[in-house]
Length: 134
Length: 66
Image 1 (cartoon, each protein chain N blue to C red):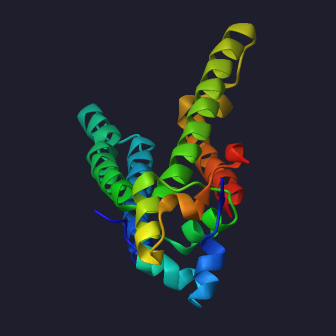
Image 2: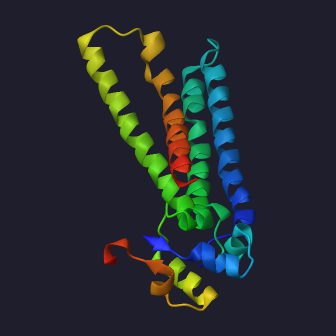
Image 3: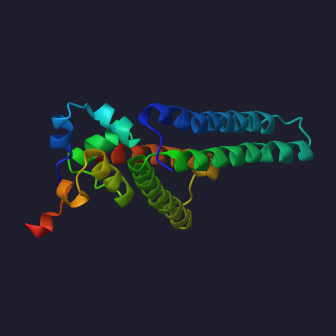
């Protein structure tokens, strides 16, 4: 099946972005609930797991959208993900080694904070890949 | 790999966006092919050949053959 034209690619990218934003809002909601001391343990566990189904829906939409992209855009996305994946592994590996080497402040370096760097690595990779083919 | 896409497009007085629509790809893809930054897949190269009425090897020239 031929790829969609540029005019129809914007909605294909907009839908995953919308799901990504919904996922982020769910994460914010979960954090608000978990920071409240009055919520019972079962409620805290439910809040921690609440973003997972939304992430699943986001993943489904992203993969469907990726299949509809034209071949250059697929190449760009692949390069962005490769860049982000390698740097994310490096970041987590280095963090693990640094934990063994020195005492890291958990308020700054726990996974609670570090995950936010992963989307940033993807967007950095995306910018580099787009520049390469511009 | 070199190609004659820009020349063929200019002969027909098509913009990059127009050619992109005819090939069902993005304008960025057409631009990247024209500037030699991206080599198209075989199915896309065949679509380009059919659209311009030339064999693929007349549009895309392998540098190593020179």
